[in-house]
Image 1 (cartoon, rainbow, N blue to C red):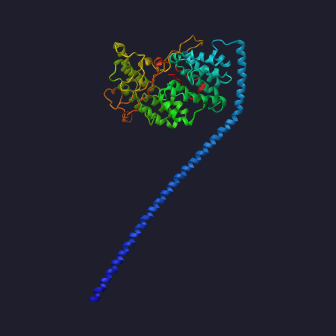
Image 2 (cartoon, rainbow, N blue to C red):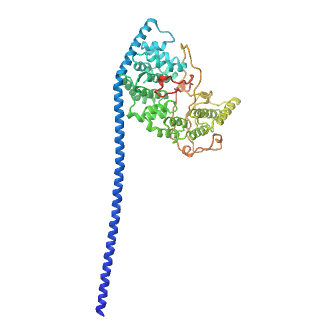
Image 3 (cartoon, helix red, strand yellow):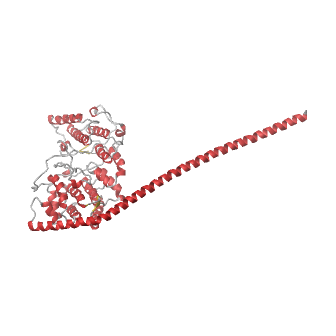
Length: 515
């Protein structure tokens, strides 16, 4: 019996030992299986990562090959067009020579004054002729590009013509304050574009001599260095900004290193009609979404709408909510102010929004009829009621009492399609043009006030549904303080905006507004 008991114990111990060995082996196999799975997943992930990187690298190589081919094609085209360009310039030289001889023998009468100045390369006389005819802006837009074709060196001629005020205003203090000539500088620089465009490649390669291109670069550098004297980027006047940016585009001297400077300048003067197109020409296309966001946060929704349409981002930044937010902001900005002041702000906003609706065909999404009725009501109230003794004069800019951006008075937009101009009227002399454009004013663009987190929806029920919080709940940064001189506060552009002639077709400016 004792031996049987001892044998059973031994068998039990052996069984226990075998069971423990089995558990260890099972655990080991489980660990090995888990490790294999982890290793397999790891190598699968590596394989997928390598495949993604390989695809990305292959795409980059294909893109590089495509760009290389495009660049080689452009270089080849440039080489091929050199001969054609030389022939074109030789013909122009002969034409200019004949025109100069005729001009010297017959003299220059009043109607052909522009051409006469160009033939004789009299940039000073040309400049005085242009700035004395601001009311004939439509005629000048058509005639200047044609006249510049008679210059021996159009690029040099234009640089010399605008040198009185750009890159540094050389006039005495009094004329500088009373007469801002940025409009004339922009007009001449825009007019030069089709004149120096490559006959084959177009505006992508201005036909400017290396000497003139270097001079244009030096002028741009002088302007940048004078920014501190102008009060910095935040305080530089919009006409100066517009002239500088147009100078870069006209002469093809845009620098990638200065992209941040360009962006700040464009955003600071975003209310100008040409700024969206200039931003694209300055290579800021990739920056546009951030720039639009910045304009929205600053309460410049109308400006944001123009930028949105320029870059085709209407789906990302729907225009109708932006315009409704702008209307609400304009009404909030007048709360607590003198009735006439608040009314002028709302009228300016209504005109700007109605113009925007018409320009981009938004009538179905935002019917303009209620806005027009509200505008008529405000105008009728203004006529019926006497102005309070403490009302702010209509020819003064007013500031939002909560520290928001400047809002132009309604006086600048009493007529349909009135633009607020930063260029005061130039003293007129008797014009020599036979035709003069009709006296019309263009649409008003104003800085909309900063967003306020407290919207009273009942007040704005006439403007449609409440604006989504994506535009209405942001806290804006400090507003941009653009403050023109007292003597140059407001002026309305008296000339009707006319279409560019066919010679401008390649550049993309359908209309130019000097505001």
